[in-house]
Length: 218
Image 1 (cartoon, one colour):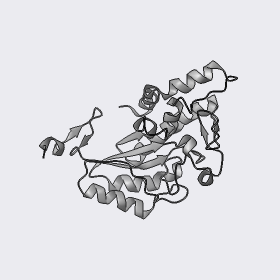
Image 2 (cartoon, helix red, strand yellow):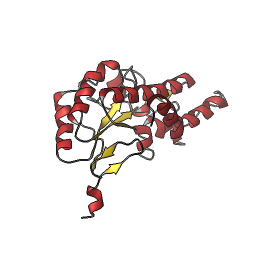
Image 3 (spheres, rainbow, N blue to C red):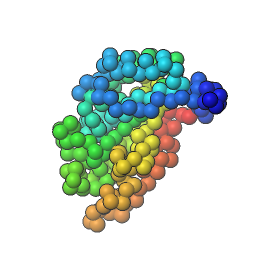
Image 4 (cartoon, rainbow, N blue to C red):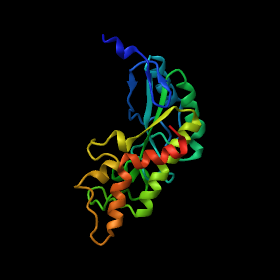
């Protein structure tokens, strides 16, 4: 075995992972319908940390307060302050590893039967029944991601992984990918050019990261 994989990894922030083994986010449907953490979710992640992973990442955690960005039943939530006690339980269970929350908005892939409302995305989409986001909604999603990152930090996690960055080429799966995909980004010609430019601009990861760093630091 290449021994480098067992050596520590230090991040720019100064945080350190004890080795190079990382648990990727897994869709496990183990939380309550509203995103509240369950014992099963805590135990699942704790066992992975105790198994020796240097970095343990949660499943994708929804970030929109209304629940409109939820991607699947039983999804973890970091979208409201009421989620903090449960998230804190997970962070405490992962204290011996580098703990990360994957923050996530499913966009047009939010199942209508799960969220109880019309999904939203970069444009109207007949197949999923979703509608185009307004400029104000695009701006609000940026703030929702930042708020979710702040909650994660408050709960005791050491990092966040925005799903719209992580899954940049993952089958148009999440909201940022959808805005970058030509076949989904069919802007209505009656909308202003400003809206189209803003849709594209905020999806540059530097926009989100610079905004988050202004709140969180490095």
